[in-house]
Image (cartoon, rainbow, N blue to C red; front, side, top):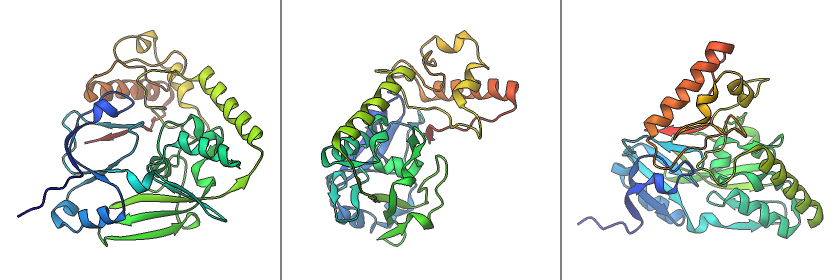
Length: 291
């Protein structure tokens, strides 16, 4: 008799939790509390054989309307912890960027102020090599601790051996980011707090607030800014309607909730076509679209 998995959520409504308030259901989402949960789950060859999707804070992920029918994973429990050691911090993949930034401030640890304005989780940050204000997560990382599904084991790899690049972090097939080991640099709390407040001030001036938004829709092309290319390529119609761009920042959405994922995809394609027609530049999505 097959034992029921109490950590399984069926038909997980991604639209309810995503920052875009849009997207299809995840047919089987497993909540993973610890390493034992992972090892037990992937000892099942049927689960191991299915396509994999790891979700974090759903801040830059859109699941197509048809939903995702593979194995969904959400790390919780042990993976929400931060541990300070003599020469590094061990940060769980489920820790929110904003939380880590505030935690570091409380401990007098500097270098993580830029995370204060990023809506994602550390796992997503490592996956994307996210960043802002001329800083990226790779600059702070010592190593990545991950789970290899095929080998059903946990490994650690130093950042020097990983080919991180602009918006390209630890994107390895059949591997799940569990923790990041991060550098520790101490500074005065007042310095840290002032920098966090300055980043927040800049964000409030330049980006929309309290809207259904996924952060930047597109990556910046080399030596270009996506928002400027978009702004100079589109007409006012793109700033109106149920799916629209922000007048404050042309690389951000301000869409109504429960818009179909297909409608968002079509809107994205229209923007890409406008930019390509005018500047012969292919805008690459920063938003992950999952089918």
